Image 1 (tube, rainbow, N blue to C red):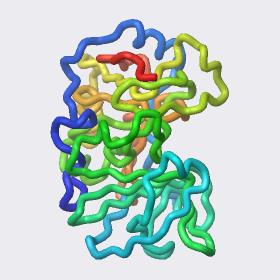
Image 2: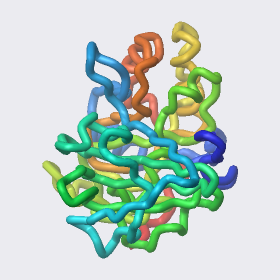
Image 3: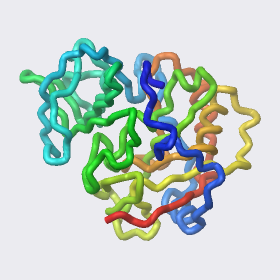
Image 4: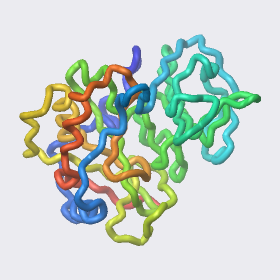
Length: 290
């Protein structure tokens, strides 16, 4: 739950238990070859005065909707208005709505309607909100099918971002019930369900046979030993074994995202950095879409 809203129904792809799904040995080996000898990396937490992660904004049903200008992918964006608060009342990835530095995602859940609004490369300018693109999601419906095939979202794969974040409240409650969003440095110019879009390859050869499609899912092997991990870190490990990780964007190898919360501790974060990428296996890879 986020506020009073469920994050998509139980049969949504993000909420699917894949602990017993068949392993795709070919893609397992290809991904291991692509990333090499690396460990996974939780891309959230606290470092001094810097807060990492992607914040989630909860707004009331009565929140005023405002126009949003989409500067990059207007034709693939869900038109506004969006219930975005003003710059002094909103949390944005990168911490400054007045000066975008990085991906600058804005995630807003409107209570009552249980609609999720997400924007990429968002910035508050003199004439109001600007984003590179934006997407709306009805949290009461299955997410797959809400985007037109071939359309991006605030994430390169055309997926909702919030549903794949490691959320602080879930970890503290002792259970994550969904897959986790992650990135790889090189992807193919195509995708598999539940993705609806691919990213422009950056710094890699799109014809590399080891580059996977957007939307591919990997799962932490059931025999990975987390018995020495703190309880909060084991919550994340259990989710990785049960629901896996879904490839959502190009980025650093096996970086996965969480929400922005000042309460994250070293026990929550540091043990996860000792999990090797080689401990993951690709599961249930469907046919390429394009």
